[in-house]
Length: 129
Ligand SMILES: [Zn+2]
Image (cartoon, rainbow, N blue to C red):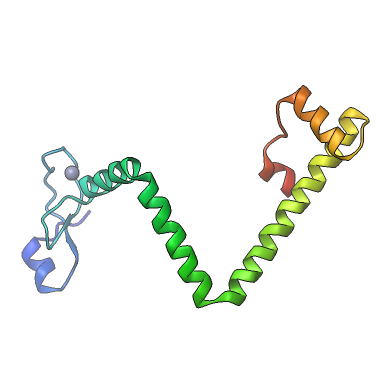
């Protein structure tokens, strides 16, 4: 990575600079022009915070999903419809697989399949077949 002094970064309005020297935690990474903070340390701190504040993180993500929905309800409907169809397709595939494997029908087949195999194979694999 190219060395960019903090003074240069500041003069050009860049958010980050790079000294090439390790931070006190040994990261050789860019630093924020405003705070001098190492980008890598900042990321780790952020992850630790998220882990310690899972409920706040979930609340924020619900909140931002709600704002997105409200800003564009038609898109949200379309995304829901696509997701629903995907789930239904997976469900159909799983049920067919369960019926093949158990010789039973519908929910009985699904139940028996899960009892003998633990669960259905990976959903992504199933839905991409
Ligand atoms: Zn660091």
